Image (tube, rainbow, N blue to C red; front, side, top):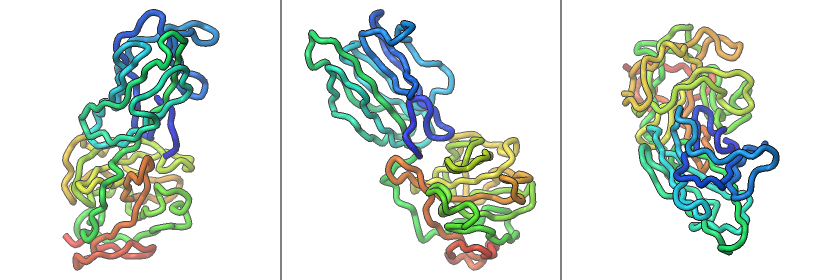
Length: 307
């Protein structure tokens, strides 16, 4: 996950600005680098006064700006069904200081509202302006992966499929941390995909599995009780009859596999991911054998469903 400007964030997620009272002489504008500017001086070129609120649709993580124009107080609301780690940093600060100082990083729980920082003028009689950036990453970096409990093969009971590409696979799993510890399981198109571990469905999206990928695909992300995420990719969008925030049980049907994936034969892309500190990465995991014992995924390994 790279640094993202205010309204171009982590794939599938959107951060918007919500401000309180705004005086007529206050100006707000976004430059070509995506940085928001707040000042008592008009922006270059056309003058555009500050808007009172951000667009009302698709608000998921909301920055609230309250207080006086030259002494704003910032809070954040996280309406997502998962915790996030938020980074709030300053850009150009003219005659302004922040308390607590920036940059700051803070974990915001699902459905919660938390204070961030407040700005104040240093010299009450001098001109002032400020800019800031903010981004977030899904998950809590303090989460610890629950080991010793292998993941269920993510397909139907009484089925068996071999892993075509495992950890650090040469085809497409060795170029980015998001996919380094993923596995690809070839399965017939329209096969049902099942949850490998229980959790909460937090994201359904058509997007790239990592930044360097050229093609997009439909995937589902499930938050496990230990704070990690299970990613299931190359699904048929209309086959997922679920909703975000829904509790998913181990072995439950998530959806069906698509007919093709990135020009290859039909396969399920599965990974376990974790926030390692403002960056989402895939992590090693184990799958259960037919006898119920843990085994490390390897290319060519035959997965047999124990149920």
